Amino acid sequence: MSTNTDPSSGYAVTPAARDEALRNIVMITYILYVVGFFVGITMLVGLIVAYVKRGDAAGTIYESHFTWLIRTFWIGLLLSVIGLITSFILIGIPILIATGIWSIYRVVKGFLAFNDRKPIAAPAAFF
Image (cartoon, rainbow, N blue to C red):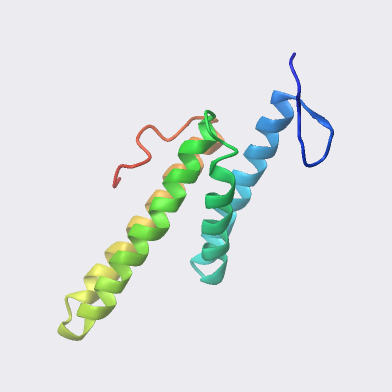
């Protein structure tokens, strides 16, 4: 088994340890997104974590999860803004409801794939 040395710590890091650390970070990020449905700021924290750790996850199954979560945030934000702007003509209310359902769907779908240790097949897809 090969080991890499983490330059920031000087300790040898095995691929299994790196994989497990990334897995924990992805799980925490999904949890931050779920909590974000109730306390919005945690979703923003999850977005920052996803951006910071996506490079570390390059070439692993977890890279697709970070991309999936990043896209979930930005598309959800865009659709929410559109819903808020158009809510005064009542079309925005169904947009906001659909955006909430879509966001929950994406987080659940992503977490289920994560739990099965599978990558997101098409992380840039809308569904």
